Length: 491
Image 1: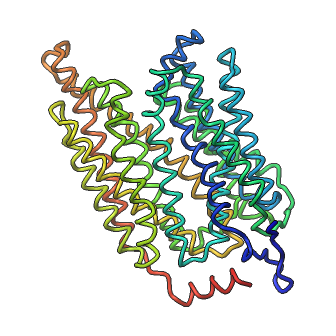
Image 2: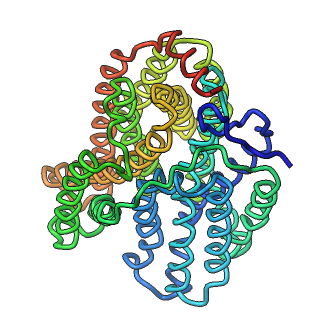
Image 3: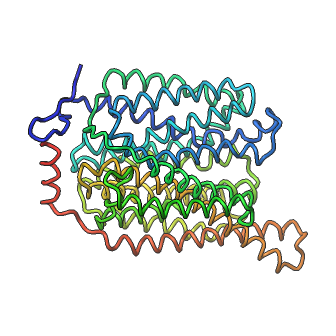
């Protein structure tokens, strides 16, 4: 069996004798089922409402609780990776996911199903940062782009395929098969991981600051919940603005504490690296637009064009397939060219797609929507290389913190982006209907909805313009820095 050792000179874990391919396969399979699971219930919510005789607001907790747990857990993964070996953390994550899947798949009541989803979310919060951190350690900087392209493939394709797969399974089998089908994949991932995954990072086991964990939980949890729930409850609801206030206060105290204590659970000094900070900002802005589009486009298809949830998933499938193909290609190009050559054109493509979506109408053909969505997804694959670029700027001791920051802020960006764009869509529709001479006319109602969607996509275009301006400040990493990182990884 391949074993990792520590270099006597530096105390750093030697990963040179590890078999990288099976390690990546195990981690990618784990991440794939975890991310697929985020959207797999999309087309089954109505069925589940009838099955368990619960309301729409209650059934929504299957998604809200999932996002909430992931948002709370991801920030502390940097600490967990300093206490647990790579093998331990992987097996804990995947066995936990398997347990959650079994609980959900055989759930006799809604409460048990919700518990299963929460257990799955715990595993998802662990596996994604672990995957990224492991790649940063075992892959040299000059090859990370291609490997990160595979991650981008999984991160984008798996959630996008979820609604389509969900529609097929719910129509042909029953909702429990949404959980049954992932069980063999999870077991295969566990078996490969047990055989090949060894520890790749040094265990420092720092002192655990429990107040920081509490503040992180209240801060990120309150923030994600408030924005996630605002769409259904509205900002005037006491639970929504109460959670936001608690979240903001907790986050402020959390940040101050992390900068003062000796062993922070999330090392914020990573933001002292300018290009890392810039790339994080870029990804957050783009991800806000992406999450909103992934929500708005199916809504437009189903409410304006009146297609079924299953058909809307089919319409979005080509873009997902194209993004899966382009992910590794974009990664390999990133390894060969400067960041601007890859990232800036990607933002331009996303901007073009947003501009086209801004003019969407009930007369827009399905083919046009497929093309626009495909352009968006191709551009996004190029933009996602900014994450690799940002993490490349950090020293190895900051890798777990850098991946935790990226994953945490993407969760926050998703919650904020979705809330902002849904709110913009709703307000645009309301404004149109208030000025309409005949608001009860079905045609006017359709025009009102269209106006709301157009306004939301126009806002998305503004966000992308901001991202384009930010991308112009990206700098190419100096060759000397790259060489130093290679030497640092070797010793």
